[in-house]
Image (cartoon, rainbow, N blue to C red; front, side, top):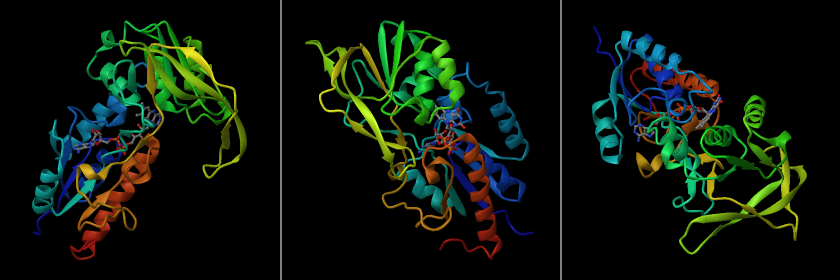
Length: 310
Ligand SMILES: Cc1cc2nc3c(=O)[nH]c(=O)nc-3n(C[C@H](O)[C@H](O)[C@H](O)COP(=O)(O)OP(=O)(O)OC[C@H]3O[C@@H](n4cnc5c(N)ncnc54)[C@H](O)[C@@H]3O)c2cc1C
């Protein structure tokens, strides 16, 4: 009997666990390496329980256990470990998500927080008390991360305002999230962008300096472009600013030169990628679909005689 091919999946988010399931069901041996304590990726660490019950993650975990999946939770794969995994497995799927946050030069700390860090503090570390002293929070962004930050904060902080540079129509967040946020008391400043964060002598945030925006022709994203209106600057009082202005992928945690080549393959032999790490930040459904597609590529590559992207 031929030996099972062994695949290490890095990341237990929707892309990683779906790919693992597909591989196990097709005769591969799979171990998942995950830096967090549980399965679920951004669904586990980012999306608050009040918005999305997480029982389906336990169901996925049990299914993987029944299929014989190996788990290394609490295991952050760094470059050294990645190199070792390459030697001990036949293939690697890097499903590490897009978890590096854009900050546009603003440094987190002392009244300025990055959105995913805030959600991690609240959802995983249960550190609501760290934010309870603030009175007036600004959440900067218009996607689901911004909505989750605003809706989490309005449960702790008396005033929460979402600042978004386009209009409500262009917001990437689900309409239901926007409506729920509004019902819960979150305020919105549309067509507004942050230019500067003002601090007092102690370094504490006192306000944000914003500028009004106008919309123009669609840009490369297909949404209306935005332009600053000269002379429209104003100051909005705030003591907490949360940046939820997009995330990107960072493969350098694993290797210097890892790049996507064709399909889900990378330039490193027998290393594939999937999910947000492959597409950039998207959705749970897209990550599930993509995890399955990547697994099928891996299955096909080994079916063709054990050779892959060598
Ligand atoms: C706050 C928030 C709200 C969202 N709301 C929605 C929504 O309402 N609807 C929707 O469809 N989508 C939503 N999304 C997007 C959705 O959650 C993601 O698109 C999806 O989780 C991507 O899956 P993934 O498996 O590619 O990556 P992720 O879910 O990001 O999983 C990647 C995993 O890799 C692990 N990892 C990373 N680096 C390493 C390493 N070096 N070693 C070991 N493990 C590592 C991470 O810990 C993580 O568990 C939301 C995302 C966020 C952050």
